[in-house]
Amino acid sequence: MNEISISLNGQLIQVPVSTSLEAMLEAQAVALDSIALVRGGEVVPKSTWSEVECQADDVIEIFGVVAGG
Amino acid sequence: MLTIGDSQFSSRLFTGTGKFASADQMLAALAASGSQLVTLAMKRVDLKAGFDDILAPIRQSGVKLLPNTSGARNAKEAIFAAELAREVLGTSWIKLEIHPDPKYLMPDPIETFNAAKVLCERGFTVLPYVHADPVLCRNLESVGCAAVMPLGSPIGSNRGLETATFLKIIIEQASVPVVVDAGIGSPSQAMAAMEMGASAVLVNTAIAASRNPVKMALCFADAVATGRKAYEAGLAQVHQRAMGTSPQQALTGFLTE
Image (cartoon, rainbow over all chains, first blue to last red; front, side):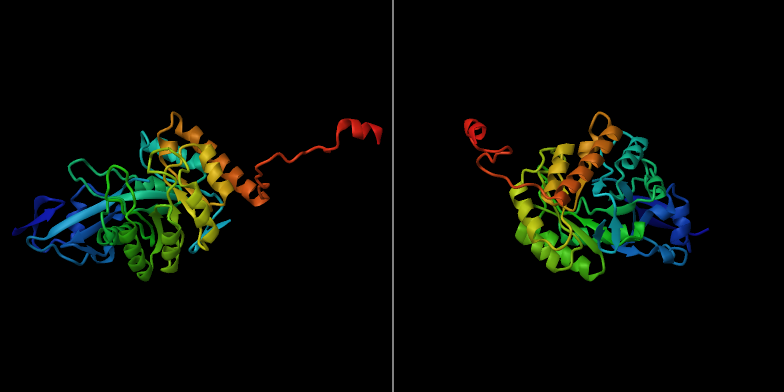
């Protein structure tokens, strides 16, 4: 299967071509309803994660919530 | 009841979630505080460290969430953090804080004002953390902030209401709620802020870093409720000289009349 390389929170990972953002996230140990995803500096709305596919050399960052005052 | 934006609060004690020894302790203290508005921060997930989902149990507790923009060094980063928070939490409420100086964490008034303007235009309910600056607070109100959150003293310092003179002016002039945020170190200081007429206080370190956070949360809840009641009852006037509480005639005069 053809794979592409993307950067996820600073780490390079390989995913099969045509992998949706949602499928890519499901392979990570994160709770999908507790995170936001940023691709190329832009927030990607959660409602589109199942349709939008990872592209080669994407720079993706995921953000979550932590304790704070 | 306190109204901020479209929400009402029966508790005037807002709480932060930082610095607790454990998630369980934090949840127990939040419950004890009776707080209905709880702050959180945003952070890039560390995938190597594993995902610690503190959000799920806080969501379950039913409190309203107030994400902050802590870590933002300018308006652009704060706006980005607010957009992230809206995406993660589904809330347009944001505690706007921009404090690039790591030693004193003083809020940057210019960047905060610029970010507040943009966020209000984008439909956020903005609660800006600011120095106790009455002019700035009025300007923030004029661009649509739902409340203002002036500091009592530096974040986490537990020094209390060192800005009291200016907090009083802000409270006098504001037509949006004034939430005294940062620096409140003891229940008596929280009570003093409420007696002064603050709409609410936000407390984190004083509860989280105490020896018994659950017990301390209860103390703060009592102090805030009592301070509010005292404000509503109307404090008696302060005088330089004595004002007698008993009849003032000389005792001998009283006896011979």
